[in-house]
Length: 336
Image 1: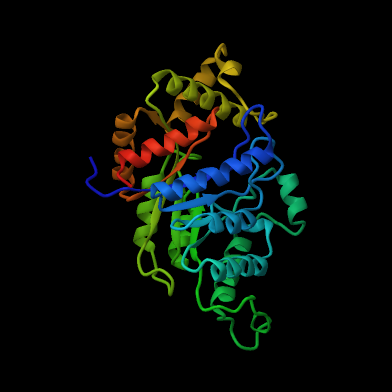
Image 2: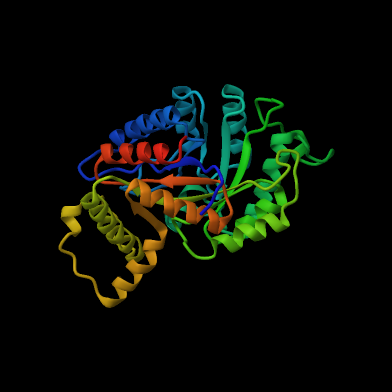
């Protein structure tokens, strides 16, 4: 088992529980952020999703500003800003302003997926071509905007990202496939692997990122965390029910139909085909559940597998108090 001191962080998608509202989901994000700050979590990232009825987090740049003002110690950031949806200059200005307001506490986590369906993505940014090269160009432009390093005589040299400040928010690239890990290595940014989306190939992708990492002005050596669904409880029945809901939720996503909030009552009598049972077994690698002692053992195994010292916990459950308690138990088990 790992002897490293494991740091814990939070990835929050502002989930809308069954019977709750988007307004309540946002208030729960605020309450959870305050608790995580008090408990000693390292960072708190909020996500960007669009055209969904189960996640309220669509504008991380707005939510970050409020959360940073409501907390004192944690780094606050995006997990992530979906770059193809946005003007690169506007991202640079948003995060320069956040860094000016909360110096030394802002993380700019970026992804190249749209965080939504293709139709919605095309409305968010009608010029989006979904090309890898476009993402690379955005990262290059962003680096120039944040450091004021455009080549003299170019169009970019005529544009400044306002406010003009010396500090730069910490930059991370998010990935569930590993490709962005290579970009993170090239640009010298942090790398966050989404194990909660794809449980396969993560350790290999992290190793490759470290091997190819090129130091930048902002980051001298590789920095990695891994995000995974986590639910911790002292109640064995709640653990079982939570897993049953997660099993069904993953199948919802894979079938591509309407995605609605679920409760255990909705899924307790579900009967699954052999193919669905196979998918359930696969998807369970995306989730770690258990009692505090079990969770500590499993998360240490994960940290050893990836050779990391920071785990980002994503917790979505039926009862908000259970969600808060899960994070309390995690903090206690890892002596935050």
